[in-house]
Each structure stands twice: as C-alpha cells, then as structure tokens.
Amino acid sequence: MNIYGFFYLFLNLSHILCIDHWSWEFEDSKSFKLPIENLSEALNYMERLNCAARVMLVSDLDYTMVDHDDPDSYALLRFNSLWEAFFRHDSLLVYSTGRSPTIYKELRIEKPLLTPDITVMSVGTEIAYGDSLIPDVDWEQSLNHMWDRKIVTEETAKIPELVLQAETEQRPHKVSFFVDKAKASQVIEGLQRCLVERRLDTKIIYSGGIALDVLPRGAGKGEALNYLMNKFNGKIPVNTLVCGDSGNDAELFTVRGVKGVMVSNAQEELLNWHAINAEYHNNILHASERCATGIIQAIGHFGLGPCLSPRNEFESPKCKKECTNPGFEVVNMYLAFEKWQRGEVQNSKQFIQNLKSKFHPSGVFVHASGVEKPLHECLDALEKSYGHMQGCRFRVWVDRTSSSQIGSDTWLVKFDKWESSGEVRHGCSTTVLLNLKPEGFSWMHVHQTWIDKETSDTKRACLF
Image 1 (tube, rainbow, N blue to C red):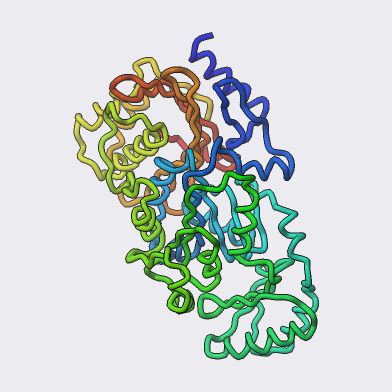
Image 2: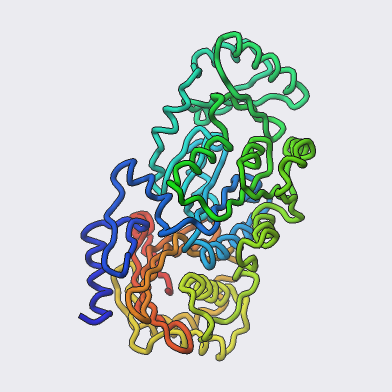
C-alpha cells in the first residue's frame, strides 16, 4: 500500500473506531492508542509526551491569559499561534482558574482559548484532564480532611458583609462570596477564628478586590500544582512557567522550582504579596505587557523558546528549506488564508503563487460536507476571495496540533481549525498529509470533518 492509501485507510479507521483527537499517538509509526475511557487513562494525558515536557505553562485565565478589555482577543490569538507553532508538540498547557466548570465552559465558547492538557478550576479544588474535563477524583477526595461544607455555610451565614456568589460558583470544596474591600481584612480574621473553633482546617483566599473563597487547607492553585508535579512519575517538566494577576494566583509562585510572571495589569493584592516575598521568590518577572502579551514576554525573558508569534512575524508561506516544523507550517498557512480574506496582505499574483507552490498539483481536499475537490480548485476560489471578510472581525486559528512522522519524508498532522466572524464560530477537525521536500513542505491531502452537529447544520462553505 502506498502512503496515500495509508492516509485514507487511517481516516476511515478513525471514523469507525471514533478515535479521540488526542488519543492517537504513533510510536515508531506502527501503533496508536484507543479512546480514553477511565480515570487511569485520563491521567495519562499528563504523559502524552515521550519524555519530560520542555515547558509546562500554568496560567490563570481572567485578565491573565484572557484580556477582557481586548474585544478582538488579539493578544490571545498571538499566544495561540506561538504555542501551536513551537510548543504544543513537546510541552504542556495548564489553565488554573477560579472559575467553576460551568463558567469555564462559557469562557471557552466566548473566547478563542486553546484546549489545555489539564484544567485546574474552582481555585484549585477541581482538576480535570483533556477536552472532556475528566475529573481527578483522587484529588477531590483528598480535600475532605477536616472539611465540612455545612459548617462553613452555617458560620458564613452569620456574617452580613458576605454576599454569596452565584450558585454555579458554590462547589463541594469551595464556598464563594463577595465582600467589600474595606471590610475584607476584618471579615477574614473573624471568619477564620470561627472556623478554627468549629475544628475545621480551612484556607480563605481574597482576590480581585472583591471575591472571597473558603477552601480546605489542602486546596488552592499552588497545592493543586504540587499535586500534579507528583503525578509525573519522574518526568518533571524541564521548565514550569506560572502566570497570574490576582491574589488567588499567589500560591502558584510559591511552588518549588517554578518561574513566574505577574502580568503588567496585576492587581494590588498580588503586587503586595510580591513586595513582601520577593527575596524568597526571585524568579518572578513583573511584565511590562498585559495579559497574554506579558506571558509571551516571560517566555522570552526566561529563554523558554521562541517568543515571536507567527501573527507578528507573518510572512508569505512560500517554500523554505529551513521550515521543517509541521506545527509552524500549519499555523502559518492558515494565517495566510485569514490575512488574504481580511485584505491585510498585498493583493498580488506573487502571494497566490507562493501559496500554490506549497500544494501538490494532484493534491485533494475533502470538505467537511464530504465533497472532494482538487486542492488547486480551492486555491482558485481563494484567489477570488481577497478582502471579502474585511470589517467582519474574521479570524482563523488552529488548536490541538499533533503530528507524527509516518515515513522518511512524510508527516501526518491533525488539528482543529476554527473560523470566527463576529459571534459566529465554525470548527473542523482537520487531518493533513505533508511531504517534506528539499525546498520545504508540500501539502498532499487535506481532510476535514465538522466538530459538532450544529456546525454541520449551518453547511458553512469553508474555502479551505
């Protein structure tokens, strides 16, 4: 069987066996894993790499990774391109958020967030793995020591200054309130004394100048990260970068051996913590940039890898001998499609010619609708679409990029490709066959399937 026959056989087997996007992993190009079905396999998400992660990036979300004052999410998209191009293949992405699973999922829909390997939620009281958010039950059970949620609610009900947060934010090991900043210190001191008298061992965290969380003593973002570190079975990440902006992130910076970044918009309580503890934690950068841009700045500051996002350093995807990174190849190609349709590159024959030089003359594109076309026809249609998305807040990004060398010069690359225009978003699970030639990668085949039924029902006519 030639390599093209193998490609179609793989796609058919993937469909029949319902292979999870992340669960396929080639070893010596001979085998792949089947879908995740239980917790023990869920924990293997942490071990999807063959060796220790080059970088484990652990980031808070609101006003750290996500800038809610950036309506176009441009800084986040810059980080996305950098991570998928240069880090996804050998590093781990972890979100550590105060959000409950409910409003975390809402944020994933609202913003173009990448899919993390691990998600720590509810201020370090819940840990979940993969896109399916498979819970770590062992972690949650470990938090029961000297914890009684009923007693916490009884004692807090006696304090009129405490205003309960939404029901979605009340979790088995977290009771959450709002409290005025001017009254916070007095409330915390009194509440802690009451809980000790009731024989509970708790932790009270104040952040954002308004949010107060009562947790078991063994919970919190820092304790959750320590727990994860112990789960690596000797494959501790080479570098761990923690990123935060508020008081509930302070614990992250206390984990042994980590590097840290406080983004430029960090809040007063985190800056005050750092001022007091700086001499004990000297590997922390106070970035001069906001949110995701500050994270990128920290990657460069600590020398963790490339720190120039392809979105900033975009160039026409012409054949280049030095471009042998499948992740970068995919990211840069879809950036070209976005910029062409937004009219942000020069409308020139040379740009289109550079694109066409990347595709094999007999290459095939299988649309998510099932329609099969020659790749050159898709490029002809793209040529006519210059600038048609101007003013539409149109963006394209890729997520969960994974590649495997299946031959001496052949790569199979799988990823999710997303397009958004205003509030509308469409996604395709995409598989690409790349052939590495002396002059660079050549795209042989592209196969897409809709990520969800809602998307397929719209019958979106994606150009590529």
